[in-house]
Length: 247
Image (cartoon, rainbow, N blue to C red; front, top):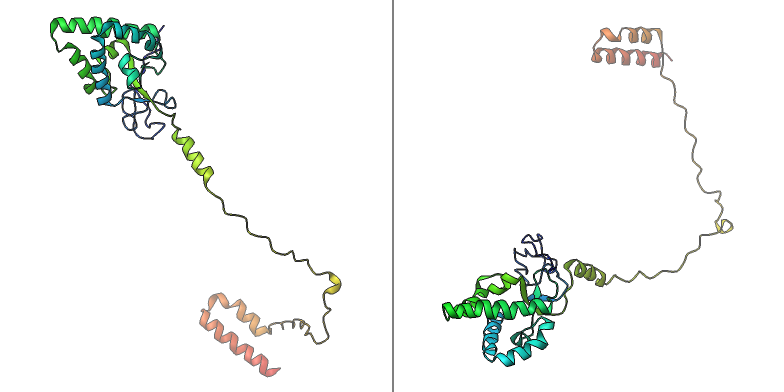
């Protein structure tokens, strides 16, 4: 049973470069295989991919050599030309391709179905199959679309963008702690000097004298609601002044 075909829907950001990855199997910005971003599989460059197809076509003309070479390289997901150019065939899901599917892709579909039928119709058949690479964002030929395969190049497995940010935060050098100064012991009660006799003692607060009262002031307080504030203050000051003079 073959692995499931990858969906055209992609995440909003590539987990490696954090750019919009597009709708293909590879990120349109960094070229990583979005279904397995840490596998080290990247999209093969267009010209390198096209040159590989043409080289495979030339080697296939020497059929015995091509079959002998294919016997040893198909198990690694490579055709003779791909083994020379360090390229690999994988499934669209990102899983390794089986030798059986590799033989079906290279011999039955690519060489017999497309090659012979293309030659019977026109000599341009194999060239159209190879030129399909330039029209497909995933660098796929017609036989890749039929079998569900991708051609990749292998690089060092990248780190996820989130892991790189955590590593950058961990690499930030923290400032050294401030040096500790000498410890100062608090003075003992015996060493604290006693207050001398010349120290001025606080003076006790003077009692506040009560406001003077008289029958006239009490009558004025009762009549306050009927008087204006100015008239009330004038009469009150006059009565207080009379009380102070009489005392």
